[in-house]
Length: 519
Image 1 (cartoon, rainbow, N blue to C red):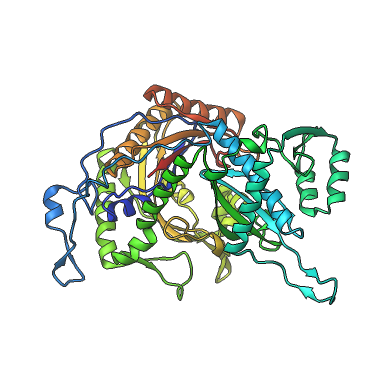
Image 2 (image 1 turned 60 degrees about the vertical axis):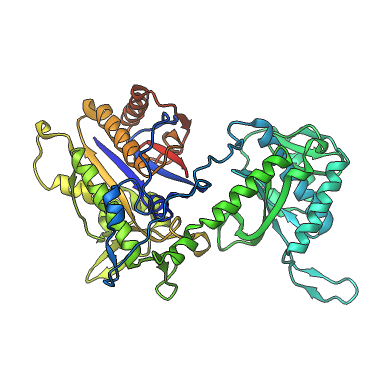
């Protein structure tokens, strides 16, 4: 059996580069092979040593490598007392259902306000998100009734957001009841057709269960929705809701479909929480890794070369080298052998592994090489499997633990790219363990311990664990999946770590443990 371990390094590098200044970003690292979710136990974190992270000793801190051959050394400043102040713990959707209801209902109220302010607006979806909610709107071209002139679709401005917020406050003040109504599919379709809302019809067609539920705001407005919501608009704290920005988004994420306008907003239970959140955002902005990368001359993304491709400058390379040396030694000490693999391979390899069938949308186009078709690699797994198959192996030699800092390339739409966190080419901690079924749980336990050791050295001590189970589209027998999921659960139980379940979110080739990191 094969156990896979991936750890993204970009968040750790920026934490090192910014002297561990706090931020509020969440990132995910994964352990594939069967998984569930529990919280890691709290633990002491090694003292922070500034620019190079806790992987660097005090002596190294004062003798940092020269930069650009100039003899200049990177100046390391100790964190200020203000930086060490713990941030206020704000509630989340997961631990505060009342907050979730506020955000969900605020989304509906905002959509109602937008259609009051701009009657041509068509609504699509409006979910809650980590720090608030958003809603997507389509603004079609309109025709001036007097002149017959075609008016281009509206582009929302900051002034428009103020108008929408004012309309929201009025709706909240009127304290409309918010009620749940069950409809048949035909009744729901008739309602939607009367409104002339084509996107709602698509949403209705995607709902496979019945009855169809809607939520009304008085007799003024309604939306397809499963809930939950507050009892009335008057329950919403108008002074704790803030509209933030407008962004573009394709309907259903399909660039061939309509371009929508997405309004982002944040919502909290009271103005004090909103103030605390805004303070966190201000601090996070000061520590935006894109700004730090440029200010500290660590890295750049050269648009002349293409979006999502990172260039490491000399100073950033010093930090990256320190991190990679630390990573290598940690894995060697844990019994891993280091391997290297090519960046491209024959397309048939990706068909055999299943990646081409299940992951083609995330892969770049293929290239012709003489009479064959090659693929730039989106992951390293098939390469390690090929190396394992290169010789006759004895069960007495198992487990094999192989680790690689493998550079991979994945297709991402330009609109989704974001600094180092969403790129088209990156180097990842990619390790594979080949072991017997009765060794599986022990190996997973060791991987989790190694993960904890590495993350804690970089100051990451707040994260959640989720076991992601078999998705609808997958390969392998039921017995193999059940054994893998059982091993993941058993490993976390053995360590006494809390976890949750994310049903159906596993990889096509196996379940996994997701670590959701709070920085």
